[in-house]
Amino acid sequence: MIADLPATPSAPAPGEAPVPRDPAHLAGELRVALMRSTRRLRTMKSDDELSDAQYSVLALLDRTGPRTPGELAEAEHVQPPSMTRTIGCLVERGLVERNAHPGDRRQLLVGLTPAGTAAVAETRRQRDAWLATRLATLDPAERDALARATEILRRVVAP
Image (cartoon, rainbow, N blue to C red; front, side):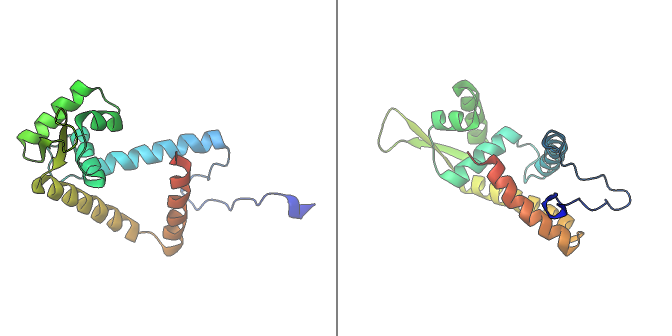
């Protein structure tokens, strides 16, 4: 019965590749698009000398508040000595500070300084501005499709 058949995707516009329906093929296409998007967004930083790993720690601290070096290493999936070096660089640059842990004097808490908070805010502003400019070139239907895709991607990557 025709009503039971899946909808046939519309033909792509001239110059556009067909939308892949096979999950394996779609996975490859989506992975490449996401990686290129991420790579481009990562170039937008408030400080060009800030590495991606350093910015990631700053952004994590901005989202979660102060953390121990061990918690940061675990969250960032790196070994504690690597995190110690990252924290040291961020302290030298005045972006984070180490303070005594209120509940465990053997521990330190790493938190953002006002300069660290400003660096995260400026980087996010630059990235959002670049992306908003790119999204403004799309027609409303394309932006609606991306809004739906955003929700779908959140479900795909949810734990």
